[in-house]
Length: 402
Image (cartoon, rainbow, N blue to C red; front, side):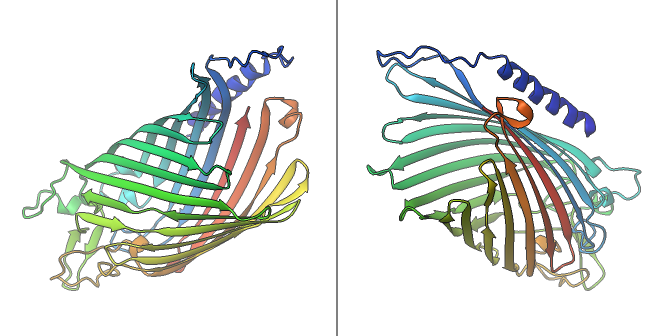
C-alpha cells in the first residue's frame, strides 16, 4: 500500500517539476485572432484518501461480526485541451485510480484459510473523457470510456454528456448518460460450495449491467443566490446480490444472499448556494431517494466555506441521512425459510446516520511552498456514524497543478 502511494506521489512530483521548468515569460500576443492548436496541459489533480471503518454487523457473516475495513485510494487526473480549425475547444480528461483495501469481514468467506483472496484487493480504474465546447455559447458535448478491474469484478463503461446554456448564461442544462457492463466472479461462502439447487455456482461469472442518467438545471437567481435541481433515474439488471454474504433463517439454515435481478432507482436532489458575504458562502443540499426494492431515504447537508484570508478558506460541513430499509432485510437468524429474497446487509436496512467534518484549502498566488504551478492544496476530514453502530473516518488530500 505504501508502495502504491509513493509511486503515485513520485509521478505527481515529476509533473510538478516539468511544469516548473516551463518559462513564465509572456509570449507576444497574436493579433490575427489565431488560436494555437497545440495540445496543452491545462491542469493536473492528485487526490489521495484514507478510509477506515469499524462495526459489528458484517453481511458476510449474516449480520453479526466485524466490519473492519481500510481503504487507501489514489487518483491522478490530467486535463488537456486543443482548439480545432473552427475555433472549437477539445478537452481531454484522463484519470487513473488505484484503490487498495483490506477487509476483515471478507476474510470470513472461508475462515479455514489463513487469508482468503477477498480479504485484500487492489482496484484499478482508468477513465477517458473527450468534450468539445463552444466557448462563445458555453454549449458542449462529449463521450466517456472507463474500465475497472479487481479480483472478482470487471467493468466496462461508456457515457455521453451534453451541456446547454441560455443566451444570458444564467441558466444551464446538463444531461449525462452512462452504461456499465459488469462481470462478477461468483464466490460462495465455503460451507455452501458444491450444493445443488442454487442458480449461481461458485467460480462462475455472472453479468450485472447498470444504466444511469442525470438531468440537471442550474439557475443564477441573483448576484447572491444560485439553485440547482437534479434528477438521476437509474436501472440495474443482472446479479445484484453479493453471493458470499450469508443469511441465517429461523429454522437454523444458512443460504447465500438472494435479491431481485433488477432494480430501478429514482433520486431527486436540489442544491442552493447563498453568497452571504465576500468571505462567506452557505451551501445547502437535499436529496430524496426511492427504488423498486422499497428503500426510501432523505439526505440533508450544509457546508459553510469561510475565507480566513484571500488565499485560505475553511469549510465545515454536516450531513444527516434517514433511510427506510427494504422489506428483504432481516437481522441475524430472523429470515423466514419461505422468503424468496433475503439479505442481512445493514446498508439496506432502516437506519439514520451523521457525517461531519471540515476541509481547509490553500491557494497562494505564488504557489504552494513557492512552487508556481502547484497552485492549490486541500485537506478534508470527515467522521461518520450510523444507528447500527458502524463508524468510519476518512481523510483526503488534494493537490492541483495548473
